[in-house]
Amino acid sequence: QISGVSATGGSIRLVNPPFSPDASQDAVLAHGTGALLVTGPAGTGKSSVLRERFARLVEGGADPERVALVVGSRRARQAARDALITRLPSSLSSLHVLTFHGLGHLILRERYTGLGYAEPPDVLSAPDQFALVQDLLQGQDPAEWPAYGHLLTLRGFADQIRQFLLRAQEARLTPEEIQAKAESRGLTGWRELARFYRGYLDVMDADRVVDFAALIGRAEAAASASDAPLLDHLLVDDYHDATFAQEALVRSLRAADLVVAADPAA
Image 1 (cartoon, rainbow, N blue to C red):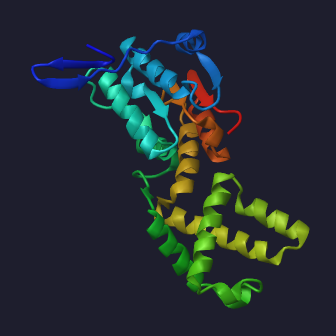
Image 2: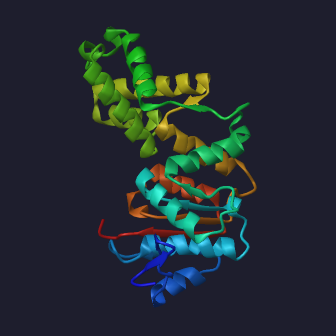
């Protein structure tokens, strides 16, 4: 074996060097229960130590179904899964390496009854959500939209409304809060948006569907409604990118062991 490469029978196999933690990373790996914040700039090994902690928890006897690593993107998810599959025994049936939306799916799949659903809600794709918003806008009476009535049939306006609905939910703003702000500042257009936002949420509730932003909020509600935490160990990478809704979701899980990693300068 030379420089991480071994040759056997005419084949070449790349060999990952063992993880060699420094003193700070050792402290992360030795963490017991409670919440721990790991900070550092990019390239300081935050992601690597979270993966190693995940692996050691499983090797130490933790139930893999009750350990989750949450990462910031699908690409990061695939990289973490590949590293852990190599690191851990192949007999493991599944690993909870997830994006926040994947975590939301997991919670709703396991705890949907806490929301009064007979089955897990369907999640609207981006095109389906756009189609719903466009359909609802075209059914509006322009007379009830003094500020934006002339825009109701425009595709670009529908996309702006779709993004507004997502951002409002990510920020955990309710239609009533937006309405109150609009009234206090005399913003006619915002009153129209608040009214539409409430109608949009009512339609989704009636149809038992959620969009990507509502998925996080519904998962938080489902986790909060349960007396028994779903996870024992929760690891979250790139926490500096988390929205208010995602932070609330992390809190709602009430994991006995919580480790989050963030770059303060990001």
